[in-house]
Length: 316
Image (cartoon, rainbow, N blue to C red; front, side, top):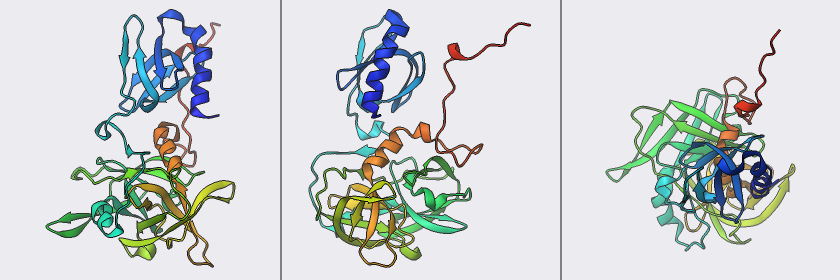
């Protein structure tokens, strides 16, 4: 069930449970959620609708009316400064790859573990980055190599305090966070739209194939709907090799349209990437995919039930 349908269904059931004293969250599609607001996070609203707790992305909220108060308008598309990541769906203006690499190259990193290496990219300035789940699978000792421009040259800095924030092994995605105390602000990417791509459009990748960091390869989008093992991938002629995994696939506006994760080993120009729409969904619902050391193989985290539904011990 889609998020939109799920929220509308919850609104219909929640109205009768909470009544007139409940808070109301108005959505962009003219539907509404009625319940008790438990928490207000920068990018998410936590609402108890009686039988479950919903995490509602602020991007789909137009206004909030709390019990006994007037409606408060919410900017449906807040500025990038207030968001966990920057994204756009508007038609992009193509530029030459050389200038784009100069502009966004610092956002691409190398992810290392004792068993191997892959690539990744920052989604915000606070050190949160995306890579593939298979790059860090079964690992807890992770380091990230960042290349930042200083005095006209790129300096490599290695950060070793790296936390696994969320994982989705089904879509091969992982969210990491650099927690070194001396870490600076990092240069992030902008997430674009793979839906806006056409077959034949130019794309390029930056990554560390076979450990050769900051390698740039260019190609075209071969197809948008290549089905492999029940999942749909972007297929590209851009050269992808071991070490590229987790790195960004860019359109010619420098926006991420996919996450490179595999290739056909006995062929050339047959690379694949996870569509960026799946990345956005993963980030928007990252609380549900929160990594837990108690059960590191489980990509889902289940919230505690509302207090009124918890069972109480019976008197003897």
